[in-house]
Length: 230
Image 1 (cartoon, rainbow, N blue to C red):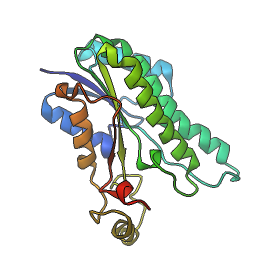
Image 2 (spheres, rainbow, N blue to C red):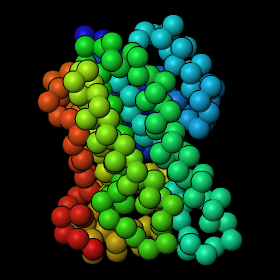
Image 3 (tube, rainbow, N blue to C red):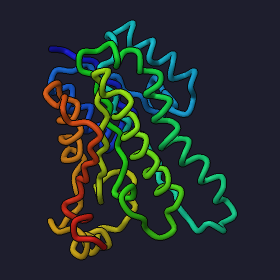
Image 4 (cartoon, one colour):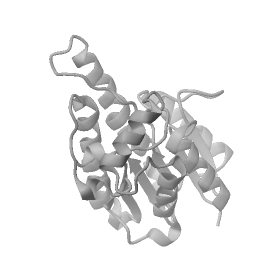
């Protein structure tokens, strides 16, 4: 059965790996991203509505939403630009996910197997130093996922949350390799950073038709980091 998916942040990293796995399964995938020939900004409600209408007209009603778009921002609460960083981070990571779900909601409910997967972070399960805008946005995304699971489950739509740990994406590319290796050796039981396709595998599994009884789950894909603690 061919299904239609929207993946935000699908031009790179975990989002791109998710697109590849869904397409390999036979799904038709629309990428919503600020980069590329047809940019979509998840913060812009009207842009999203137009983009969703375009997907519906060209490849069909939407069965799957994967919210993988996100930005990382931090800093101490007394930083000069803290308020601006807070607003932008929550706008993209939390409000953007909500707007995408709202724009696709009618299709998801009409689908025989509506699926929502929100990509949070292990920062949704704990907190690091000087990361409060990012950490707060990811805690909020986890709560939003659980609320969707409760509100939409009886309508046949499941909502689940994937929490990647240290993963080799654009967000971590600037970290020197030696520092990454040291962090992984000390904090990740499997001893390395994860790969985007390893996170995407879990996301794709949660969107499967057969995953109909997995609802409201929060799954850490972190090599055992949260199990070990910090």
